[in-house]
Image (cartoon, rainbow, N blue to C red; front, side, top):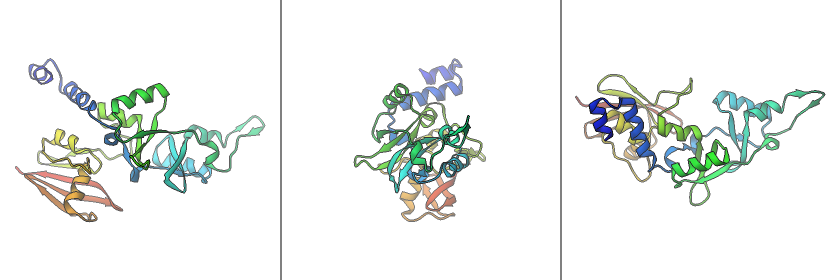
Length: 246
C-alpha cells in the first residue's frame, strides 16, 4: 500500500521513508540502536565537577555515565545541570562537592535483546533519556539514549560537529560513517551488503572481511561494490568510501 501510494503520488518520498522506518522499528532490539561501548563518553567517579563539565562541553552531551575504575562498573549518571549547580553560589552558601560521585543519579539498564518499541514505552514511563545496554553476562555493551531511538524512526539527527552518516559524492560513490547500520546503507544506496551475526554496521562488515586491524587504504570487494577504508582513529573505522560499478 505504501509503495502504491508513492507511485500514485498520494505519499511523498519523505513520508514513504518514514513508513519504512516505522515498519522496521518493530523488529529492532536495543543493541541495534545503541552507541557502542568504545564510543561512549564517560567520566571517572573521582573526577572533579569541573573536569566532568569540560567533558560535557567537548562531547556535546548534557549527561554522562559515571564509572568507578572502568566502564564495567558504571555507578550512575551525572547531568550538566548538576555540574553547573555544584559550582554556583546561591545566597551565602556554596553548593560544592569534591568529586563527581557526590552528584551521581541512578541509571537504567536494558538487556541488549530488549525490543526497542517496548523499551521506548519504559523510557517514557520512567521519564529517563539514557540507559546502559548490557549483555547476558551483565557486561556493559553500550549506551542507549532517547535520541538514538528517535533516529531509528526519523533518521539521523546531526549535531554541528558530527559527520553526515551517508554523503553522496556522485551516482557511483558515497562516503559513509563507519557506525552506520548495513540495513540503512542498503536502503539508501540500493546495495545488497550482507549482515552478519557478529556485526550490524558497515565497519563491522569490513573488519570481518579483512580479518585484521584496519588501515587507511584497505579495500573490500563484494559483488559490484568496492568499500575502501578512508579514515581510521585508533582501532575504529571512521569513514568508508563505497564505490559501485557503472
